[in-house]
Each structure stands twice: as C-alpha cells, then as structure tokens.
Figure 1 (cartoon, rainbow, N blue to C red):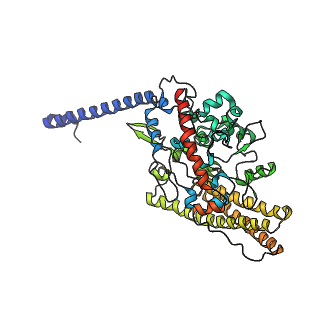
Figure 2: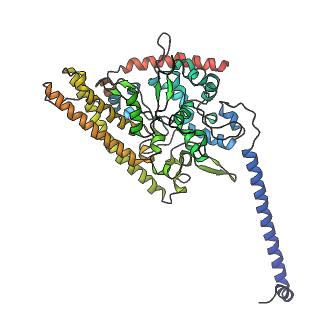
Figure 3: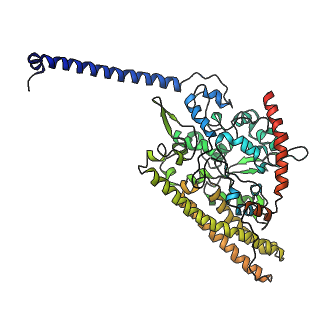
Length: 495
C-alpha cells in the first residue's frame, strides 16, 4: 500500500478530501465533548440543588421548585383515565362489581362503601368522601380514629414529628380535618437535605424491631420498596397501648406470611369486628401488597416496587425516577420490557391469564363464604349454642381471612400468583369444612332443608340483606360534605 504522503503528492484532490474528513472528525469529537460537559453540568444542577425548605415541608410544589422533572411527573398522578381488565386508576365501585362483598363485610364499614383508591393526589378527597369514615358532625362524631389519616397526607410526617406517634393517633378522625390538607407527596418518602429515601411512619420501624431487624441497615434497593411498605401493608389498630389512642401496628412479630400474621392475631384473641349475620369474630385484611410481594419471584430477584411502578425515564439527556406512580401495565416499555423482551401484547395477556384464573377460584370461595354466613345465621335462629358454633365460626373466620387477603392486596395475582392461589385454595378447604359442620348442626336442630339465600345480585340488594339503611347513610354524608368539609378548608386557609 502506498504511503498517504505519496498518494497526496500524486493526487492533490485526495489531500483536500483527507483535510475535510479530518475537519469533520474533529467537529464531531468537539460536539461529543460539549455534550458530555453539558450533561455533567445538568446533572449537578438537577441533583445537587440548594434546599432551604423545612425537614417535613408538606407542600410538594415547594420541592418541585428544586426537582421540576420529578414534580412534573408526580402531578400526573391526578390522571384517572387508565383502566386494565380488572383495575385501574379510576374510582371503581367494587361493591357494584362484586355485590357479595357487602354480605362478607356485614357489620363492618366496608359493606357501606368500597371503592378502588385513585392516585396518591386523590387520597384526601377519597377518604373524605367515602361512607366508611361516617359523617362526623355535632353530637355524632366519627367512630374512626385519627390513625386513619396516617397514610393519606404529606402533612403526617410533620405532625408525628411534633406530637409523637401516640399524640398523632389520639382522638377521632374529624379532629384532623383542617390539619391534613396536602395529598401524599415528597415529604412522605424523602429526606429534605439529602433526598435519600426515609421512613416517616413509626409503625414500619416498630414492626422491624418486633421481628428483631434493624431497618437502618437495609440497602437502598430495599428502601425502594420499604417506603411503599409504610402504607401498602396489613395493619390493625391496637386500643390497649395508650388510653384514647388506637395505635397503628403491623402484625409482623411472627413474620409477614398470612399464617404468621394470623397466629399473631389468634394469640391476641383479636378480631376487627363481629359479623352481622354469622356472628363470627372476623379479621379484615387491609391491603397486604408488600407482604404478598415478598413471596413472589420479583422480590426474590431483588426487583423493588419502584422498579415497576416508578420506572426510570429520560428527558433532555437526564435520567430520573418517574413519580407518576401507576400500574406497570400503563408503562410496559419502561417497566416490564426492561427485563422481559416479549411483545407488549404477550406480556399483557400473561398478566390477564393469571388474574382470570385467580379470580375464578376467588369467586368460588366468595360464594361459599356467603352461604357460610347465612347458614350460620340460620343455625343461631334454630337455637345453636356458643359451644356448638365456636369451631364453625373459627373456620369461617380463617376462610374469609384468606379470601380477603387475596382480594384486598392490589395486584396479588401479578405480584405472587402461586402464593395467592395457595391462599385461596386453603380458604376453599376451610369454608367447605365450615359448611359441612353447619349442615350436620342444622340437621341436629331439625333443619334438613337447604338454607335459602336472599337476592344479592346487585349492590343495593346485598346492602339491604346486610341490614344497611343506605338512604340514611348517604343523606348524613351529604350533610357532612356540605357543612363540615368547607369548615375544614376554611380553617386550613386561615393558617
């Protein structure tokens, strides 16, 4: 091959081509260097701002001045348009879709109203509007405790810091109406100085202590799930710690599986309520999302809640966490397909297949439990004794705890379909045992005919069968929303 010098000497045009090529290469290298410097400067600006707001600043807009990208994505949690096959971000009336639930929760506030929660920014509005919180006004204050506000607002970390956990929990729900004004936001999960993730709800720290674990020693990746576990968990209110306080407790002393938490409750002799038809001492699963997630394949492989529900996003060359917390089915390319290379349609079909199969068996258990409650109610009417009913009611309690655990955990059939299927199967077995014992007991009491069930084909009919006067409840709530809530807003505006 001839040297470049000889080629240029014999062909002057080649020299100009080489010169121009060199200029282009130098220009492109300069652009690359400029881009790298610009992105580094942008990263420094975006992630190391000078912060001057207070440690527990509840207003996320203030945080947004320093973190505009994250705040902009956070604002999209107001969007309620997404709907998957069974869930979504809209205000779905679950009693309309599953009227039997009104019977399963007879005697408990969930039989009055159970709507799927919307995005975090709707948390305060939704708790104000639900019939479960009653209509606190005048001489009829809400029976629900202040503890119910714990996971609804970014005002809570500051209130707990000022008053302590017991101080915040003390009293009834309506006392905090004017103090809790900001929806779930930045202060709930972040340290205002370092932006590190932090735990702001004492119940999670106390649950770790009860298990003999130090929450301060967990990894950053674990924290990306634990900040969610402050609220998306099973819990109960302990009324025996401090007078006038219903103290928030996660029942994790024995562990976080269904059976370990069930044993915790059984050892305490605890029940959330006595069923209005069967008189069984019932357990109400809240939303054990975190506990079920721990039993799934994603948790075992170190995938956090944020990886799927708050995936990374890039804008202007800057990579950051998307704070539009939502279903992974609405962000598949950034959530699922980071690891799973299948087509979107295949991934969605897989999720729906699991949900369909889980729901099919859950519905079987649901129908069995409805029959259990009415058959137990008939047994009482026929003269059954406490001794005769004790074991039967315990089977009903345990079977419904399993149904509720599967139904209340958002996304259980995705987070851990094998465990959810196992839980439902064991519930079906227990409900079958309860019905077998009830049939024998009813026969011994002279009742050999099938117990006829009332028509519960609609929400209204089921609520009526559960003994609810929904017209009165709705009228009381309408007065509350018209009189009490505006007063809360007025007081909040004066502060």
